[in-house]
Image 1: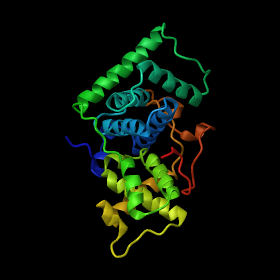
Image 2: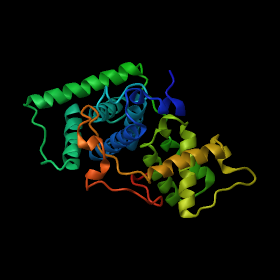
Image 3: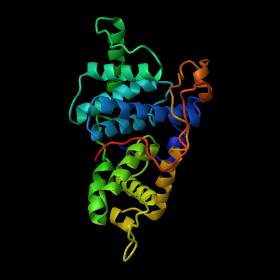
Image 4: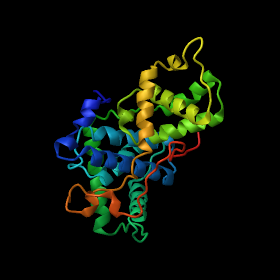
Length: 277
């Protein structure tokens, strides 16, 4: 089963065939992966578990449309599936409470825990379990993700470079999970690209003699530049926000300018997702 997708497949996704623009799909992909990252931190999950959930989320929307599966439900389902295939596991009640907290904060609602005696709780739980089932069915239980993060420390040892460079590279890797490069390129190339970006920011020279450093990672300079461009491009985009594609009359689905809480990141010198190696 192919778990990598071409540019053509990304551009002609099921959502595009359902009339959702590239900009809206890109926004919702970023929104979903960012929320998964926030939930992973609040649930105190290992970064490997969180990243696996993000990759599952990205893969799924290459097979199914955003008009079939709501981003909020799919984000919860993706992380829930990830906790079952990695360690440690989390109860579905904890997943629901944490994601609900995130939605409440983002939408300026009163902070309240879900009342497990109410029908709303059981409806939400049923939706997440249904999403879990559909994810597993779609990929035939093949949930393994070869994470680029595991290559960073080994690469740093090979290149004999500083911990600061390793941490900056790690941060770029975390940010790259918000793009589709995670399902388009092999993890070694993504790791090498993160090192390349970090070295440019920190002014660290990487060896090109007697052999170019990227050859250690079985990638090419051209591929590194393509991936680096996509990661850098992330920082010039407006902050991701939720769009209700099931209700196109909602003004939030038309323009991001109406929400004063949304900001635009314009600098490429800082990455937004920091976890310690």
